Amino acid sequence: MKIIYAYDALCGWCYGFSSVMEAFYQKHQKRVDFEVLSGGMVTGERIGPIGKVAPYIQRAYRDVEKSTEVKFGKAFLEDILEEGTTVFNSMPLAIALSVFKSYRANEAVLFASALQKAIYYDGTAPEDTKAYGLLAEAFGIDGERFTQQMKEDAFLAQTQQEFQRTQQLGVQGFPTVFAEVKNTHHPLTRGYTPLNELENRFTALSQHIQ
Image (tube, rainbow, N blue to C red; front, side, top):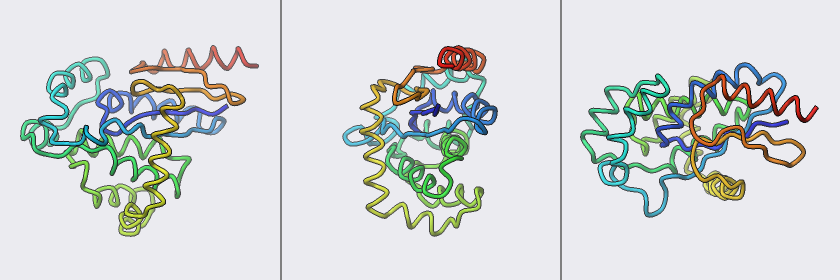
C-alpha cells in the first residue's frame, strides 16, 4: 500500500489539513510509503496579485481556523492578504517540492507542511525562491544549491507531470488522499478530514484488503 497526498501549497484548506497529514504520516511512515503530489491550483491565467486571484481567502481563512484549529499568521494576514499585491503562483512552491523529493522523497509530507507554514504563517511571498532554500537547509540540504536547482528545466518538467498525474487521478479539489493498492486508488479524503476520521477510513480499508 502507498498513501498519495494530492495538495497545493496555496490551498488554505490544505494548510488546515497539514497537521492532520503530518500526524498520520508520523504514525504510519514505517510501514506505508507516502507520496506527495502538487496540484497546480494557481497556475497559468490564475496567477496574479492575491487581492485579485484569491479574494475568497478573506472570508475562508476564518472558516479554516474554526474547523481545523490551525492559525494563519499575522505576517500573512497583514503583509500579504491585507496589502493585496503579492503575486500568488503555485509553480515555485511545486517546483520546490519536486527538488526536495530528489533528496528526501520519504519526507515530502513534512516539507509540504513547511512550505505552507512559510506562506500562511510566516508571510513568505510565493515567488521568494530563496526562502525555499532556507527551508531545505532545515532538512540538511544545501540551500543555495537547492535554489539553483529550482531553475532547472528537468524539475519544471517533473512538476508539470505531477499536475497531469493529479488530473489523471481524478482530483477535483484539495486536499485529497488516496491509498494505492495494486494500482487501484481508494480515496480516503476529499477535502479537509479530521485525523480520527482519516484513521478510521484507513483502518477500514486495511482490514478490507487483508
